[in-house]
Length: 462
Image 1 (cartoon, rainbow, N blue to C red):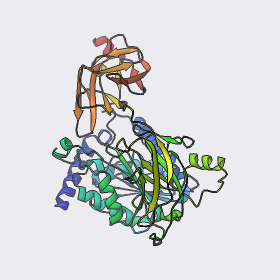
Image 2 (cartoon, one colour; image 1 turned 90 degrees about the vertical axis):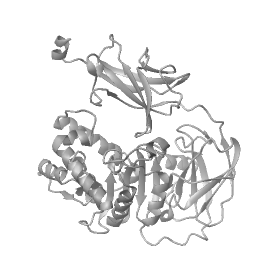
Image 3 (tube, rainbow, N blue to C red; image 1 turned 180 degrees about the horizontal axis):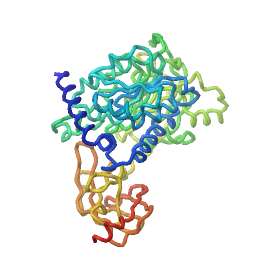
Image 4 (cartoon, rainbow, N blue to C red; image 1 turned 180 degrees about the vertical axis):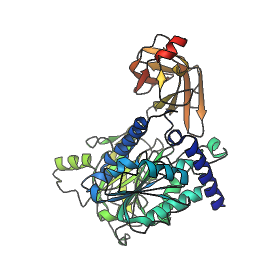
């Protein structure tokens, strides 16, 4: 059965590569120039690798080897090759690899391979410092194939190496009931990620975006056999809100609803979000991060006289509104060892969750090019954190100071997001604007919206 899925993936992605590889790799604009296509790859590399302190801080990237899973025709590969000593790219589509080799023929440190879709048997074990994959597993129609890829990616990692990837984290009954194919792939949410990390012998270091289309995971291959943790005593050295290291009160809703504990006792190489847990007001909580102390918390610790945090572990725990607010006793432990001495943390009452604008696109081809007139002045905005009651009566878009009544509001189960469709006002000016969404009395944080001038030829037609 897995071979049948893999054959379908290979056939479908070969067809897409022949039809319009750039569009199917990067669905932001139907007809993309090489410059536009390459620029989006540079942005992804900067965001996914260079701005990730865990992957890039204090590491000589030029001496490292990176594997890119789902390289396509090389949108990100060429930029990775300018950073790393060796870059190897794999893709299930032989046609993608063929085009990629032609595009990247002048890069002697790039090596591209067609795979069978199930594993990376063409590559050696314990070879890569980093394995990286984004916008790939969302299109895989079988959870077993995703598991197989993750396990084999861990095989080719060097001990101590990191594997960073995205999966579809949507937990929605309507989405689960949809027919899956090589475009709308299966969900692979947090419980699956935690289990495959255990099955692969990998440490779960970081998990972001749980429950959403782009759920990010970072695994680490252990340096050596992990020491016995049953007798390891945990001590809480410091705690704060995860995104505000000086803030000691913790929200129970919203983006800031995360508690960081800085702990001692376990060795840094024992950090694993599958092994360290906390008890918050009697509720068992598993972390979304367990690893080295990040730069902002190093500063907070230094202010308290802790100049060397290399032997400490940072653990970030999501806090939900299910946990009672007020004074809460918090303690932690590693595996089956004893809990630490408790600390008292102030948890704030739940607050309304604001809508979150994901991105905007035109309704014609789904590209991010939105115009001040013409057919591409009708656009759709994808929004997280609305409710099932959201409709044209209680949702509004706001572009700068102009309020816009939507044409439709609907839930898109394949993306786990709401889609708000609207027409730009006729008097809108091209340029940079601010876009927000209101739902009843709740208003999202505004995001940039660029509106393009209508081309001369199109203006004459109108």
